[in-house]
Image 1 (tube, one colour):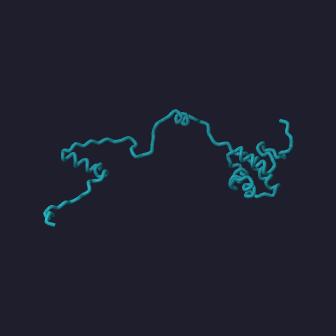
Image 2 (tube, rainbow, N blue to C red):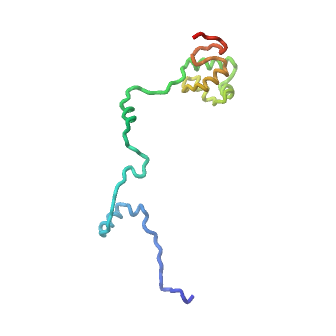
Image 3 (cartoon, rainbow, N blue to C red):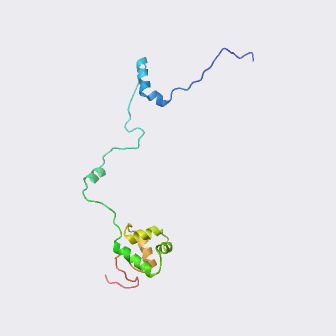
Length: 145
């Protein structure tokens, strides 16, 4: 223990954080001391924004037509509902039979669903009616269109 020097004192301090060194107050005090200070503002730094106008944006802005998704007609929903009731099925039973959620059947019957040919085909096979044309006729009937 003879080698230890009891007079030496070491104080460990943290340097100022990056936020402190970038603060306005820290910049002003560095300028007063005469230190070299370089400041630059980065455009949209730390944000997930892009204010770039593209051709598509301008085209959408100039668009006057009201755009929306095509929905299942209410007549088709009524055909699905009648076919389901004729088979004695609930919405949940029909949904289980075609491996879809009951909410899907409810949306198709109320006319709120966006048409999907795969789902429509499953429903038509399950209830035995062609519902896409809005005409309720058995699938085995021959039509001459």
